[in-house]
Image (cartoon, rainbow, N blue to C red):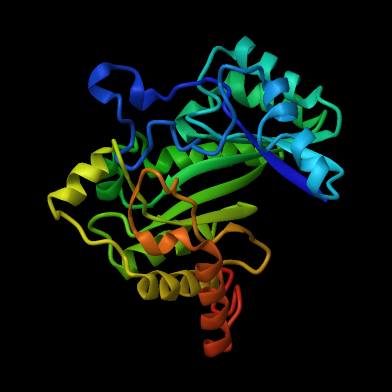
Length: 290
């Protein structure tokens, strides 16, 4: 068994460069979506071995043989190249770590980073997670994503050229988007040379711009039933060979404002399975390869 251990490398994000932009994307938590990652005050090695989700704890409870270091919080290619090199190589130097998962933005994958990732991929398994969230430029502006769809497409091409696996993030329920908008994003990514996708429901978290919008009733949160149906719609459109890394997200319960139904992850996953059974459906059922 291989287990992924989340770490916080202490990086930042282009959207948080100034005090006026400290919130980042409107949905991003103060921890940069790394609420379940390790302690950034510890070294990468210490986080991988000694954190509450580290090798020592996990090996006591599970039959786990190998690990992937998951650089999760903020933007994990947004730092000087030598700092990136040092932290990535520190991670793969830990015994039984057999790969890297690196969450980042497509506008933070310059030639020097691509070159470093190419070097790393010759030493260990590497996958890159890109937070697209939506293909729609209007939505991108609203959520303050900070890059265009064409930037995402160029990053995918650059990573394809060096043989790096790519996992794309989509968020369902973003303000202003309806079912057709969400499924349009699914149709577009299904045509790309990607290897996986993470699907999340929109979470309203404390201390975010999204929380302010929610308090002023500027958008509606998807109900559980709406979300389940859209996820199954999406699964039907995705290529059969895509790895589905996630079908529902974890919002930290101490800062989660809505939707409360997302707190019961097992129930959401069971409901998705039940919907698939009711429809007699499966991943790729409606995928036509074009």
